[in-house]
Structures are given as C-alpha cells and as structure tokens.
Image (cartoon, rainbow, N blue to C red):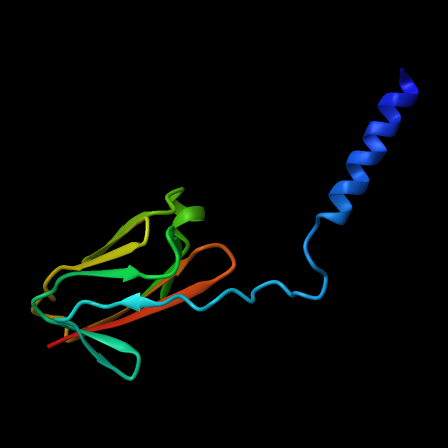
Length: 140
C-alpha cells in the first residue's frame, strides 16, 4: 500500500511539473488594459482635467473583467488602499472617492474649496500582473 501511495505522489508531482508555466514566457506580458473614458472628461497629455466644481467619472475596462486598487497618490501623498485600509475596491480621500466594481472604476471629486487652486490625483489599478494609472488634475 505504501508503494502505491508513494508512486501516486511521485506521479502527481511529475504531472504538475510538466503542466507548469512555459519558462520561455516571462511574467508581465499581459495585454495592456484598454479603457473607455467618459465623454465629458477632457484629457491633456495623458492627464484628465477635472473642473473645480468636481464631478463623478466612470471608466470601463474593455479587456479585463476584474480590477482593483493598487495605489493612490493624492497631491504627493501615497496610499496603498489594500495594505493601509484592507480594502481592494474602494477608498475615500479628502475631496475624492474611488470605487472599483468588476471592470468599472468610478472616481468622484468634490468641488475645490475657495483656498485651493488645484489638486493632483493618481489612481493605479491592477488586474493581477498588469497595471494602469489614471492621472487627474482638478483645477480652476
């Protein structure tokens, strides 16, 4: 009986080794994320321009079905939502909020207060081994 069990274990290990990933295909060669951006949001040099009044903007990923938050940079301050707040899908900052739902990312901006001329926000999302950065500037 021990001989059969030992043979089965060796067989499972051998099959698992043969079925592993191709060594010639390096990690990270996933297709880039493709996004449909809101029509009412202006983009300048890869940065979305948000009006001082704020607003809510939903982006749709067309080639990945599940995205989550990786990193948020708010006016130079970096936050890792999953590590810092144990939430991979939503984050509320000062004057903004982000929510990931399947292949949608919704970013909401509160109006700028009277003493603030502009703010910058970067929202990095991931779908595993692929990442995308949304860059925003809210200004008067």
